[in-house]
Length: 268
Image (cartoon, rainbow, N blue to C red; front, side, top):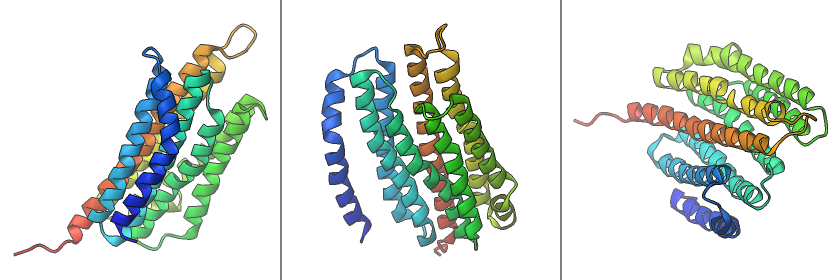
């Protein structure tokens, strides 16, 4: 299937998925609902990023196309979920916890797979890198959801999730993935890899901040979360998503286009 056919097939699907929620949110979004506005802006940014990443697959070598397609899948999946999360917030003023974690359970493993894909593009990356990063994301996300959904203690879910994040950081900074990037990656890929892991370090640190605001800072005397807690949690989570998902994809795009340009023979 050519890129043109893929794009033609993608656009109707995205429109069918978004038309009902777009109509509802447009009619009910208040000018002072800054959380709702953030949902709207980010959903549009994610959809625009999807088109960009898929379009740019035409400009890179074949070994990089999968990485850019995965970046497009991440932003597309997130955009569709943001349309639904936006509706939940506008209609109820409550956190769309279930939709958010469904989104993360799909997109965060894909982001981690990106490390494996760019390493595979420059050499023979082992399957162990793939599985360790995938397991780390599940350890990070599942307890977080169980805590936010009330199945386990909030603090227990938070601590286990943080351990999963630390496990991922170890792999990309000191594990096999880090060693391969240091020993085999050309300069452009090494630079992108280094920036990507700092996105996972600094950018992902925004998520625990939202968790803390939502469940520890903005609580009343009885220990119950307040309306301000929900607003703070969602604004922080939304900011983290737009930074991490779009910025992450742009770093992949930078590495892919830089290496692809080097591969083009100079003309006389």
